[in-house]
Amino acid sequence: MKHKGFKKLFTALLCAAVALTCCVPAQAMAKSYKLSVQGLYTDSAAVKGTAAKGTVVKVRLGGIQYQAKTKRGGGFTVKIPRQKAGTKVQVNLYKGKQRVKKKTLKVYPAHVEYQDGFSYHKITNPVKKRIQGKSYKKNKHINLDQLRYVRVNHYDFHGNIKAGELIVNRKIAQDVVEIFYELFQNKYPLEEVSLIDKYGADDGRSMKANNTSAFNYRTIAGTKTLSRHAYGMAIDVNPRINPYVAGSFIDPKNGSVYAQRDVRKCSGKYKKWMIHKNDFIYQLFMEHGFEWGGDWKRIKDYQHFEMN
Image 1 (cartoon, rainbow, N blue to C red):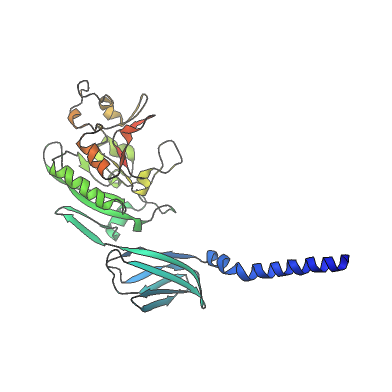
Image 2 (tube, one colour):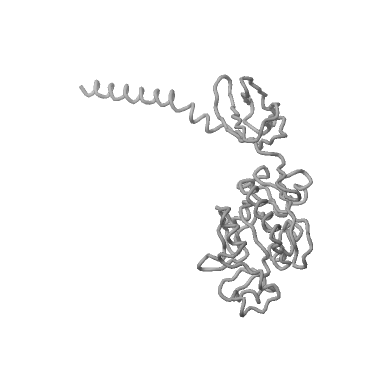
C-alpha cells in the first residue's frame, strides 16, 4: 500500500512538473528577450532599436509586413513608410515562429509650429551636442526621444523682445508653447529663457542670472530623489525674483530681497512681477494642469511649476 501511494504521489508530481514546463516557458522566455525601440516621428523612415541576437523584428502596417533580422551587435533597422502623427505602430519580436515580445509605439510630430516664433521639435544632433554630458546624461529614467526642444519669444524687463529656448518632456510641449505664447501676448517679462547648459547645467548659476529654464537631469538638492526637472516636467520662472525659501535658507542668495512676498513691504526692483497665488501667470499654469511650488506647505519654491 505504501509503495502504491508513493507511486501515485510521484506520478502526480511528475505531471505537475510537465504541465509547468509546457505552460510557463513561453511567458518566461518572452520576459528574457530584450527589445528596445527608438521613438517614431512623422519623418521616420524606419523603426530602429536593439533586440536579442538571432531574432527577427516584424512591423505590420496597412496589411503589409516589414521585417529585418537583428545584426551581430543586436541592432536592427526595419524600413517603413512615413506615418501620420498619432498612428500606433506595433513592433513584434520573433524567435523562430514564436513571438516573444511586442511593443506599441505612437508616432509623434517631428516639428510643430504653434505660432510665429513658438515651436517645438524632437532633439536634433546639434541640440544633443549642446546638452550631452551637461543637462543630459545617459540614464535609465529619461531618453532623448521623450524630450522636445522648444522655441519661444518673450519680453525682457526693459520691454525688448528676445528669443528663448527650453527643453521639456514631450507630454507637456504643447502646453508649454501655449503658456509662453500667452505670456508673450500679455507682455509678461522674463529676464532670460535659455537652456541651463549655458550655465554648465548648474542650477545655482542659472537662478542667480534669473534664467527661466526647464529640463536638467539632476536630483532635488540635498537628496537622492530625481527632480521633476530631470524628466522635463518642471519649469522655473524668473528664479531670482521668485526664490526657493526654506526657513532662513534662500536660493538664489541674490534674490533674498524677494523672500518678502508682500509687495507693499518688498524693496525689490521687480517686486511687481513676483508670482502670487491666483495672479495671471499662476492661473495660466494651473489651467494647463501644473502645480506651483509656492503652494507647498513645508518649503516655498516660488519659481517652480511642475506637472505630475
